[in-house]
Structures are given as C-alpha cells and as structure tokens.
Length: 347
Image: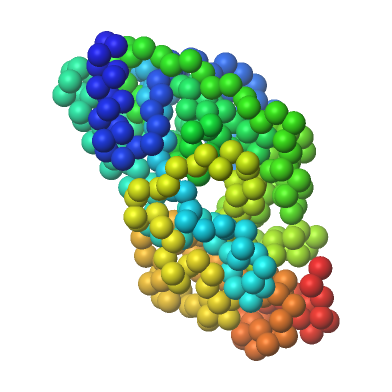
C-alpha cells in the first residue's frame, strides 16, 4: 500500500495537482462542534445548505461509511498580478481572482476523476469525488491530510503553496497510509484580520459570513445592509483581501493551468460597461464562468453598489437607468448609488 500511495501521488502531480495528502475520514475531530457553533450563532447567513445534512458535514465518515481513506488534492490558481491594485481604480470593478476565467469546479472534477479512475484500476477499490458542492468540510480534512493549516482567515495555508489553491477530495475504500496533519504556523501575524474592510472575523480562526464581502456579493440575496454597502468598495464578485495580504504567499508557486489566468476583460472591467448588462448580455459574457450562477440581477446589484462607492459623478448616467429596473433590489441599489454620487459621498 505504501508503494500504491507513492504512485498515486506521482499520478496526481502528473495530472497537474500541486499537493496531495491522505487522511482517514475520522481524522478531523471537532468538525461537528465547530459547525454547530457556527450555525447556532447564525454566522452562515442565508446559506441554508450549510445547516442541512449537518450530520454529514460534521462527520465525514457518515457521508460514505465504506470509505477508508480520503485523498485531498490542491489545485493552484495563483494570480500573476496583485489583486489589491484594482481596489484603487474606483471606476473599475474588482472580481475575485478565482472567478476571472473558467469555472474551477469543472476543471478540478475532471482531473479528480482521472486520478480516481487510475486508483480504481490499480487497486480495484471504489471511489467518490467531491469538489466544493457536496457536504464535505474540505479545509479541516486537508489540514488532517497534511496539505497545510486553516489560517486565522479560516482558509487553508501552506508553507509551500501559499493560499491560492482549490481543494478536491477523493473518498476511497482503499486503505492508504495517512499523512501527518498540518500544524498551524500563523504565529502572531494578524494581517488577514486587519485588512478585512467589514471586520468579518470576530476572532482569529473565526468568520462571520454575514459580514464577509465574498458572502455578501455571491451568496446573499436581496439588498445588502446600508451600513455595509460603502465597505464593499468596488468589489462586485468575491473578495481577495485576506488571501492577497498573507505573508506566506511569498512562497506561492505559479499556477500552471492556463484556464485560471484572468481574462483581460475581467481583470479590471469598467463599471459603466457592466451596468449596461441585461440578462442575455450577462449570460453571454459569463458563459462557463462561476459568476454566471448568481444571475444578472444580483450581479448588477453589486455593480450599482460599486458605482455608488466610486465618487465619480460621471457614472451617474450609467446607473440612473437602473433606478426603475424590473428587479426591486437592483432598483434600490441604483437609487442608493445615485444619491451617494449626487451628494459627493465616498465613505
């Protein structure tokens, strides 16, 4: 089995993954308790799917009782530019690095299936593959598998990879030798906590999604609380601040998957252009992109908030036409934006 594991690692790296680790399904104790507290405090916001099937999220062994090992794999999407630079361009939109090109779910899942099929051929075992859509707590399992540790921003960090990587999981009936779990190496650093515009971290290693810009711009339906709107800045889909500021990124490896490199039209798109998108235009622009799943209305809502935060009166005409939009939330966001621009407010 040790030889099989070594060959499995070689296969996964040859397929393009940057890191591989193995743990048992029950190797991440405390998941259930942490999840229970998170949900009980309401910190999951509108993400009802997180509260559903909690017995599976809290106990990976219950998800598939026949599984004896979990293979966790890291997929790099390291940006070739500083994602914080666009935040100074107030008439431009900031799109999270991971969403600037193809949807990672499709790319990672196909790669996982190729590795999984190889394992089945070698061992005659059974497998199930997961990429961020099943009730699997990938980050605690990845730490248990030795890929890194959950930093103070709750994302996974690696001494070798930084924190720009996706996670995929292969559950298998094969009994593979587990790796040593990752150890926390954040030390006294609080850079990720200090940079958060909305103070979404109540304490180190804790996140309140209701204040997280990634949650607010992607998962949250309806109007965003007015106290939080100015803090969104020009971020219209996700937020990379806590990832980009992490000192461990000085060791980050370059991404080799070209389909993750940012499209030129999404690195710093003009807010005025995005505000013009109707449903057909939105679908055409974001075909094959993870952005497509939030729909035109939520996307344009975010664009209107960003315009309202731009301080650029030249953008009033671009958002004025949205004040009577058929979607009530978009219309509300547009009126808010127009009011701020006419008042000359930027904070």
